[in-house]
Image (tube, rainbow, N blue to C red):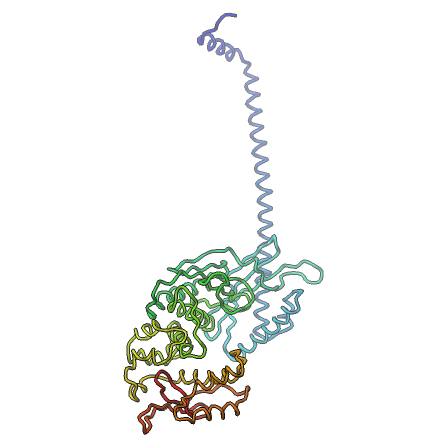
Length: 471
């Protein structure tokens, strides 16, 4: 075989093309056109079929959505007119307990409505449907005392003979939205998207508190970062996590209630969180490496409780509901005094040790600058705890020692008073409520406090380091 050069090959191809039948070429072009037309027709038909299916699905979804909104409207109307039967007929559950809760909820709605505190606007804020799972959730607006709230109602679409259509069902924790995170300074809030409004309010409030509490207490070390988990679960008080000292666990208010829409927290949740944080921060300020536990028999127990109450009052913005004792000290001796007193607090610290930096001269004038109501309330309450014994889990002998230690027997008569009260004591005796405290100086120049509590008038004397009862 000889070798063909490039110009020879090209020449041969030209001859072949030149000799090709024109009819064959035309037929080949027609075949290509037919194939393209078939493909276009098939594609168009497929698009029409898919479009028809999508349109049908959309029509079905729109119909289900409208049926759902009609069901929500029927539920709101039943609440407005007080129609319990229709209200309950919209519900369906195998849990009789949940059905009983719904009856109670209906009664609560009627009570709020009849007192003029509730406005059922019926405005739907959000609708989420999961057609594949035949479920839906609807966020509805309500107004209580003029404040806008959101509530979430869960529904299931039934197609059986007994009931057909959307029916209200118990909360579906698997339909709470995507897990997400919000970061504000040292505060991280973990939540599901359904709780976004509540999570924002929590993040705003806690980040504000986290920046303030250490300024008030002059913490010896920076506070650790705070984590908050908001969980869809049955109503429960906020609590600290069992395995993380700086993690708060909150129940979603939407699980069986309502959540504010104005980025504010309800007073109950706010105060509960404030108490938890105040307790943890005070303990941390005393000893960051250990958990501080004050002795229930010493003044330090009173001070720990007052520090916590003082922080709560400041965090919620109402000092009058916090600690009048510390607020009176702040007003007379400055903002830093409570923090300085906290630095020397020990489990068995006495009142005199802490007051020596604010009241170097114990006289009537300086005593009257301080609100002593909470101290003597605590002091009389301690006496009741000791006499009850079971509350502090102490023996009979220890009870006698602890109780006698509350009295100043330097005159030789106070222990007789103590014995008299022990003999008259009843475990059912309610706690005393202190109405007034008056200070006097006796003939020997000793400071005394006359405390009026309910129908009891008790006299206390300053015994070097604390107040002790004399009658």
